[in-house]
Amino acid sequence: MGFSRLRRCADSFAAYFPERHLHLRSHGESRELVLSSGRQMMIAGIIAFCAVWMGVSTAAGFMAALAGDHEQAAVAQTQAKYERWIADRQARLNSAVAQLTASSHSTDELADSLERRHAALAMLLTEARGAPGAIQALTPIILTRGPVAASPDQRIASVRLDQERLIEATGSFAKNRADRLRLAFRLAGLDPAVYAGRGDALGGPLIDAKDPRALAAVLDIDEDFARRVQHAAADLSDARGLTAAAANLPLARPTENTQQSSGFGVRLDPFTGQPAFHSGLDFAGPAMTPVHATAPGVVSFTGQRSGYGSTIEIDHGGGFKTRYAHLAAISVTVGERVALGQRIGGMGSTGRSTGDHLHYEVWVNGRAQNPLRFVKAGDYVQQAG
Image 1: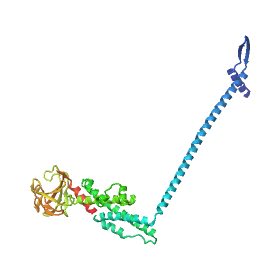
Image 2 (image 1 turned 45 degrees about the vertical axis):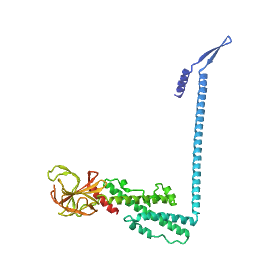
Image 3 (image 1 turned 135 degrees about the vertical axis):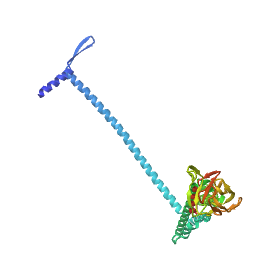
Image 4 (image 1 turned 90 degrees about the horizontal axis):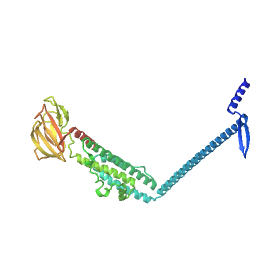
């Protein structure tokens, strides 16, 4: 069986490589070259071997070149890591040298720095002193002292810690108060930036610079401390401006111990049962319940208005006006200047009314606003105070 297969293979090779006769002519002579099947197979084997050898050699050269590129990339990466390591160590060394140099300053220089920071803090606390709640918020910090230290360096460190605690507490107080007042104005639909009045903190021009570096140069203190002083001063200035503005805006409640019975906006009219726009807030209560001015101003109208009955209108300036309607009694006259909380009349049911109540409106630049926003804003202002 095996011999038969070998025989068939030999026949196949013989078919592929039949005996060939080549006639060569040179110098008038003719020669015949016989290529037997075996010789042809030997030549084909040599050619195949050379092709395989050249392919392997080419592949080996390509792989060697590729390995060389990878090796160069690895070397470059290692060198980059080494350079970064050196740069990092150099930066740490420079930082250590700087800290060592800073810590080697004399005690007198550190004491001078503390005195200058104390002066800036004193100016800031002067500004904060007039703000409601400032004394209660900052007194515990001022009275709390650090531990008694023995050496001058330890005493300086203790005073510096006290300064840090005080500037932190002052900044926190100023920011919380200013943020609450800003929120109150936004609740009323007003832009707090219009009323904040920045730029007059810490005695005016002395610390009017908006750049902390300029402020640090003026006060001769470090820039970080100057920045914190500036932020706290700006918040105190905002809070002071917003507080002053709030005192002249209709943010108070017009009556006490009464229930809101109807809101601002579209509602069912109590007479027609049809949807109608209601331009104010209604507060229900007994007849002659005191009605108060919600902000200082000048009485601009008293008398009867169609649908409103007995009415009082007060001009608060800046485009703000309030209206108090359905009154049973009027206690003020046109042109009279009234104070915040002053009684101006008594609750009633005059005009188009179904019972004793106060109809209260807030107008800004000739347009009716939702009074509830101003009432809520007033509640926030009181909390901020």
